[in-house]
Image (cartoon, rainbow, N blue to C red; front, side, top):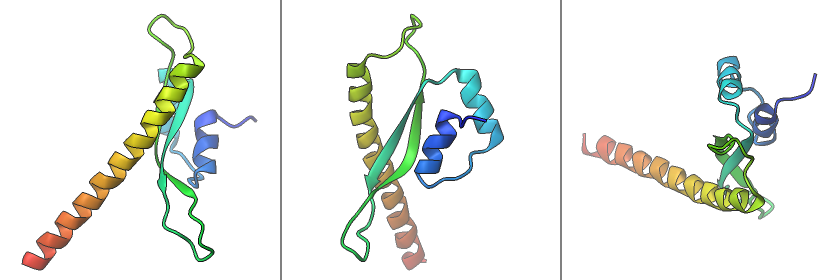
Length: 105
């Protein structure tokens, strides 16, 4: 049985399972593109840092039913990187807010 594209991407990103209802939702939406939102991981003991996927954006065809052009995909991949950074910053901000709340209580 061939792997579904989203499940394969998540497996490569370190998430070995995706819930069945999420797979059904992706199938109903007819998503054709899956763009990972990656951020730099903390540096390992060997001094290297591999990017870490924190979200995946699923996209379908255009309103006219056409597939995206390579230029469109390239632009969206670039935006996905910025979205990954924004998500990471939001998580860090929330973490700091929690710490501030804990220390003032």
